[in-house]
Image (cartoon, rainbow over the protein chains, first blue to last red):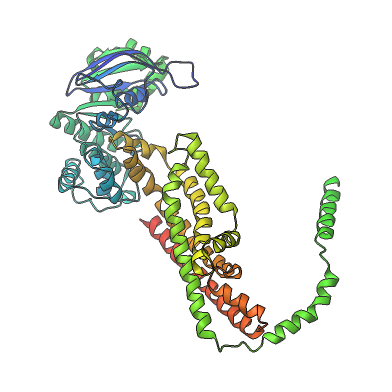
Length: 257
Length: 251
């Protein structure tokens, strides 16, 4: 499904590599969790996969297509196939839930119709279905600003789902939520992706959490993959490799469940 | 101490240069009193005509502001650093805004009167020109302060550039845009009253005529209408803007 070959990235004006020779093969329907300390390169890797950054080297194949070599004009079609949810939800707070979810239908709509706010019946239908999937049926006309944090992340999820994505990238999706909601959101995300056969790639801070919601864990440290395996393969030595000093990973593990 | 001397010196220099003099002012009071005396009682024989001209002034403000806002809206995206990556276009647009804004409405009025002749139309053009620059600049600056995380989210859905602007940026700046535009409508009504003085239509033109014909009592009538209308428009616009802001915050 996704094949990453020798991926490298160095941010402008920085000497250190943010991603250093990453090689990964991700199968369809996998639930991959990327773990690592802040600044280890988790987010950069996710951004490279939907090409919201331009990696400085390497190749990324999605369904056989090299997405880094396609022209700028068609790159949006690639992004459209990949849903993304964020730590801060990134919704337009003053607008309705429906309007926010319809943004997921952008790639199916023309510029002119988007500017005028016109969407097809099918777009509305898909948006409604997506809201039902995340348990927010009936909230269509509510303002996002009036919702709770957990509900906002559900709206963001519905926006991603209405893209009809093959992959969902979740960049620390629960870091802004309390422990109870964290579990609720991750349970829901995992359930939907399993049902819809969507490949889920999330970056998570907490180790115990990563174990619970993954079929496979990738550990990144300073832009390099230092662990790649199932949760059962993850030893104490691996966690030290990923997080550095024992004290640090202990902290990450302890804060989870 | 040194700063004190400098401040005194600067004021002395400025006062001498402008021939500001309290004695001259006091000497002038009887002339002023005479002028004011001749204005009473206000002559309302032409009231209907003046009121019509006041309405024309309001119409000029409405059309001029709307035209300016409509021109500024698309240009402001080209003048925002986070939308326009081409530096030449960005600087070009910003320069246009600065020139339009830097030239006072009355100067624009003089330019357009010589172009299209006397009347309210050059007034409308003058207001539109100034407002394009002013609103363009404020709009661009508002666009530059939007939350880039929301833009990233819209980009990640596969949206095109225009869709990103329409859905990622515009909803974030919409309340600010409306607020600025209404503020300029209010501003333009005040500016439009003065524009008549250079022949660009509206009640200002009547004021000029009456003054030239030494019809002091008519001048007073016109001044009363102007003050009343400006006060009314200011209050009304402030009320609407407050309402809009309040609704936006609540929702």
